[in-house]
Image (cartoon, rainbow, N blue to C red; front, side, top):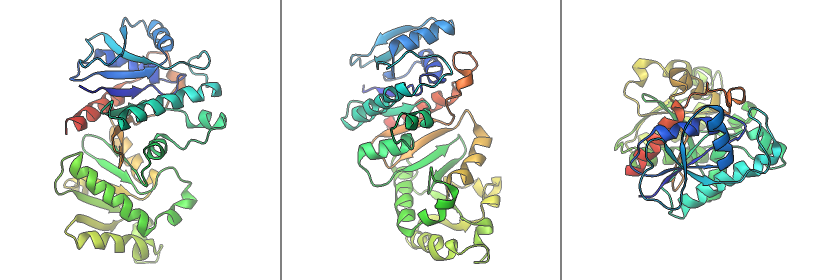
Length: 322
């Protein structure tokens, strides 16, 4: 059984804390944490957790309860919980590099990721937009799609980490075709939804209100959506985002396509923060992630919640079965 790798993320944050909770699990395949082993042992001692750490050397069976498979990634400098250190930026990126390399090389089924601190990586002089963009570049694919999900709602994004003033120019017919093609493909292949039903947010208030509040819906978005509807795809035209997310509209939807980050994700996270996860669509391997940040103030406190990481691991393992 090929392993699933878990990156522990920013060492000064709650990534190591929540990764410790994976020792509670009994999974059908190995789940391996990429981390500095000494850091993990120190965090376990702080949190008074008795866990057996086992070096992963290709075992094909899952770890026992109370045991955690670890692959050592050496830190550059000692970590103080809650205190960022730009010298450890390369350590964080090495976790991502290994996880992507193993997945692309057929040595794993994929990766689930704990949070990173983008600011400290950029402070180290390394341009870094986020996990999603990193894995896209590493895999050499033209486009990926960020989708967040709870048990009852999936929201994909047409644009991700862009300043709001840049969003309208980024929403082109070409981008929308790429995003929607990936969304439909992965809903069918990874989630086994044969005939996905997709609702689409307009960009402007009231979806442009027939051009009075913007013409992007008329000139860009709806013509693309019409082309899919003509192929028999169950897809709405652009809908006002302020009323799209009502229970009546969502009850038959398999996914929502939002035009930008803060259009769809606040709704999703308000429904299930701590239980939501991030899935990168369009990659040639499985990648899921937690829905929260590094929570530096909670590192080593015992107050960090690990539920999102467990949901991310659950989904990654479930997708691997497909």
